[in-house]
Length: 311
Image (tube, rainbow, N blue to C red; front, side):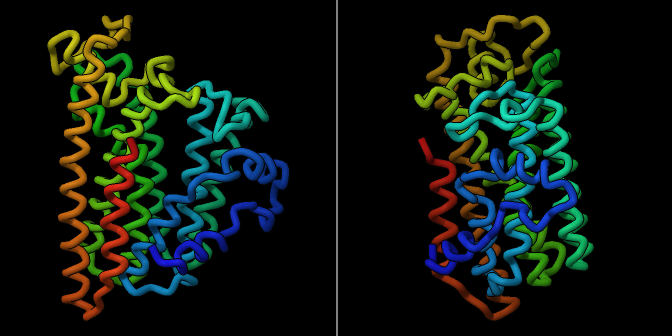
């Protein structure tokens, strides 16, 4: 990763200090879900910008927006998950209340759409609106999965795509749209972001069982059927179609290790797809625009491995 990318991420302002419509909400967000974090999504957006020969100054507003959307999902997730801690500090619903956390997340989404609309890029407004819709649908699907009578692997992957893949989709689609590429090319970029997001989420599902930072086991506690839990239950009950309405005991100790191995194998498949798509996208862009960015390509290739192999 080039030093310029790190500097571009550092320059992004997430304080919402300029948004004085409701400083109480802006202050709450700035003290909780917008405080700290890895800024992964803006980082990826700038990395893709380098691949497409885009100026960081032109991309920066859109790199900022994706992090704000991500923060809004954290506000909502903390309520859904009954969280108490976020990044080592009190979660937004503990600092305020569940109702205020939900409203603050909604408010943040409206801010994002206003900011993108102000750029005059209707295509990017539509792109983000679709992502916001996917996020809501992902939460809905996750709730349905917990009581589904014929729960399958496809249902688990659909949640990962909607909740995590949709946001990472922006980091690849937005630069492609800003570079004025054709619809088929943009769609390939969308899929690359989604595939990385699904792999990222499934690795998180594994980490939910192997991390030792006090937040492990959250999905079992909240009866969220993530990829590892699904595989472990499938092994336990010897079925790839689970009737969750009849499963009240989520003790998966006996089948956990094998389940993690199976999910890891699916992550490896997704990583292979991502590498193939990335090099296809880079080659196609070079053919159409005559621009080649080997350093940006290698950096993204390395990032794909990192995101999916954080264990």
